[in-house]
Length: 382
Image (cartoon, rainbow, N blue to C red; front, side, top):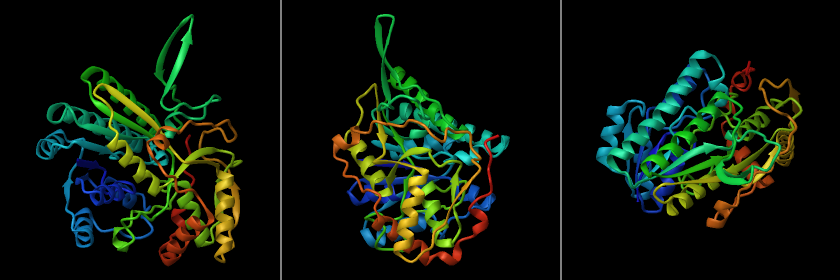
């Protein structure tokens, strides 16, 4: 396949590029370095510095012999998007290219506008470029389990059969996002579903839970190929944050009662899921939806796992409950279906003490770079 990865500089984008390249596909990455720039602007730099995309691609070629193309530019700029799609003409498009942080979207009106304009505008331009240059291509869009919220019924895999007054129809599962960022993801799904019905596009929407981890099969050969690893309150995912807090001797920041339950997966499983979705594309006029997670945990359960794994390598890990800065249910029913990707062949990498200890050992190597002032700043949803 010719695979164009949008947001190819990101925590998931760059590992995805290497993974598809290692399988023999022709890969190009596109990014405007928004995540890097926002991290600098908010003083939320990652744990260790990563090379830029041109340098990463050179390093990857040294180890693999494979080329990865690079496009630097903004998906909200139609002339740029139009020229990239006209030149590359992808078979598969993997769309990560959005402002990725719920807390950032809730900081203030300016960050909210940036999130809205970037996320919806970028997705719109991708759709229009597909229609113009590659209408038979398959778009894989990274959604989020956060679109569903925490309903008091089972979360089905994207769709819900509704019976009403003697009639029935299948609808997109009702969604109730918990932040503006997650709301833009809901809007993405609605936008894609509209153009699937209108133009017959092929789209797979992956409702992904929070991802954790550093290591993939492709980045073991050279530390410069590691993904960006955020540990701050704005851009870091919860388990990655907890690992860094444990290494730094900073009490694990459990929000409120800690009963918030979510579905999680290892970064290696994200790569598996993307490849499976690409190898099993949606038909023309079809919106496939998969719930992308392997295990569910409460925040308290994650904190306990980090505490136990830390103890196994000599760390004294403290857990501290703090006032919840978010508007969310802290104790709730949560039972998401997630069989679709397993049926395609997903082999989960579960969260074991050994997996956590391996991540901790890598973080320990960079302990001197941890800035505790970045860990928690109390970004409030109100």
